[in-house]
Image 1: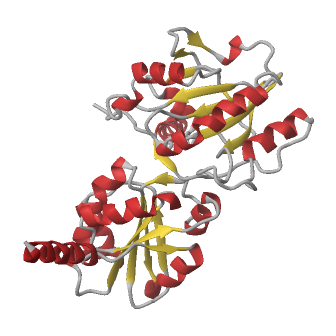
Image 2 (image 1 turned 30 degrees about the vertical axis):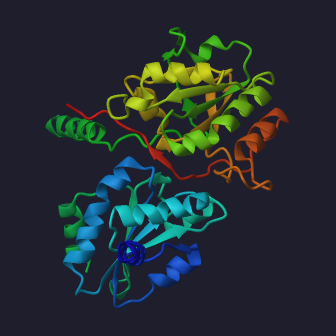
Length: 157
Length: 203
């Protein structure tokens, strides 16, 4: 009985530690995070409540896993409300999200959206790809299939 | 002559292949529409003889952002309908893509919450396309003029979606107040995170 309790506690600890905690990130912190010119960054803006976003998250997982050995970093930036921080954490575990996951910390959506890209209307999902070495930075206000995402990375890596 | 014909074809082609209409910008004249209200009656801007303008709000049932703003949309109508700027809410979404936004569910929501404004369904999505709404909620402030309904503000209701910041900037209120005072709004377009419009899958 005691062993079983220990085991379940252990399993619980493993289950909560196998996926990193979601970190809050401000716009300047995000810009800093994607400023390494040796790495290609694919940054997806999503939300737990956004159907099309949730549907394409597995592709971002797949992209990161497939090219784990390449200089590619997939970042998932949740645009959920700050009050949903715990829900985002739970979501990351249940959906087994592999990339780094952040929660956008912002005073207003306005400055965050414009800071990422002036042409972004604010509709989710959106994806930013940055290759500092090539001076390439482009934002896509659209949903991706895995093939499209892979092609995008292959073209700009 | 031949050259002229070719030129005509080129001109025609360039019209035909013009990229999709990006929607209304500030200063454009918005066309009127005729859409079905939750009470079954058709509503047009022309029905509002004494209005000075309109707050056309693209919103819906299912979207968390729209939900977060619902009370504030209701307040806007209470604040400004009597002053000549009523709220006209339009649900732009395809009910097949998002069953929560079906006409029946819109009726339910409007009744439960006692909407004081019409809640119209854009079944063909033509109005949404013409306005260029991208997400819900998305507000278009129109001012009635001799030459039509001129777009004065496009964007978010305020800069505080969660409604937790007391010192929020009320973009829409500021813009309507400016018009009521005979001035032009200082901020004429803003952005906000929102749910994408659920378009009909083309056959």
